[in-house]
Image 1 (cartoon, rainbow, N blue to C red):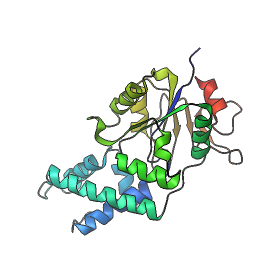
Image 2 (image 1 turned 30 degrees about the vertical axis):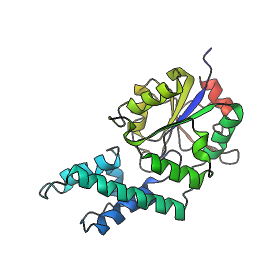
Image 3 (image 1 turned 90 degrees about the vertical axis):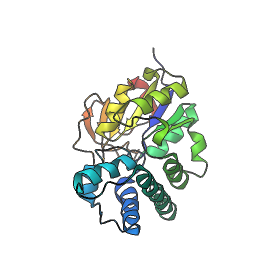
Length: 249
């Protein structure tokens, strides 16, 4: 029988609802500071999330929405992204975004059992640390044995590269892990690495295709706040805990 040895978490939208009120705001503040007539509304940003990676998202937006403007150089895009990252970290530090229901509890349960923890995300390592240190605990980065993030691999989600990297660093087989994602790009990435995946949707991703997911939930749930099962079979469980996860492997 295969034994569950590690949980691998996506970050934005999975651990916390960071996209709308932190990343999007940081982008818009950066654009304004550079006198760019770009403003990403809540709806538009949701559309742009189909493109993974902040630099890639800006390049896509410039090409699709401002095709007649002079193209921005890769160096300038990188400068914008660096400034945006700093603004994001300031937002997260000054107004920490709460973790989604069940996230803290499940991570603490996993640690108590000796289950290994990893991160697999397209966001930058700096953004990961800012969120974890301000919304989880000051030493949270040390809780995660592997942090596969940002440009550590060339191809971003939905390519499987970031999960392939995490598996290599963990020295584990895909079937010994469970991935937690919130988006169509995320599940395609995890399943591309053959890792069983649980989805917790959010307002931006609820309409996406999660074919192949072990479970699709509204969130991980809490003992006093049951999750809603959108697809899959959770049995009698009302919230995701380690006992439930061991049965899924």
